Length: 134
Ligand SMILES: *[C@@H]1O[C@H](CO)[C@@H](O)[C@H](O)[C@H]1NC(C)=O
Picture: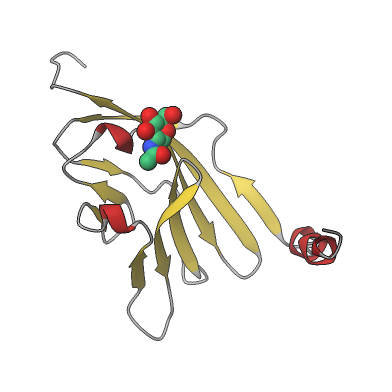
C-alpha cells in the first residue's frame, strides 16, 4: 500500500537534536517466583521534561503513564488480562504480582520527551519455586 510510505517516513524523520538512545545494550536479567511479585526497576531518570513512560512486554505495551506538570500522572493499563496484577511504583518501576509463566519474556521501558526517546530492556525469568543460593 503505497500511500502508507509518506507518513511512515515522517515518523522516522527526526530533526537535528532529536535522539533515540538505549541505556545499555544488554538487558537486565530479573528473576521472579511463580505466584509471587517482582519489580522491574526503572533504569532511566524521569525529569520534568518527561512526557510519557510506557512498559512493553514481548513488544506489546502493557502500561502507559502520561506525565504532566499540571496534574497527577495518568496511568493506563493497556493489557486488560493483567489489569489487577500490574502496577507502577512512585518511581515508575513496573510491579507484577501473582506471577504467571506467561509473564516471562522481554520487557522494555520507553520514556519520551519532546525531543528524545530513551529505552531500556529487561529479561524476566520465572521459577516455579524459590531456590536458595541465587
Ligand atoms: C512472552 O515471551 C516469552 C518468551 O518467548 C513467552 O514464554 C511468554 O509466554 C510470552 N508472553 C506473552 C504474554 O506474550
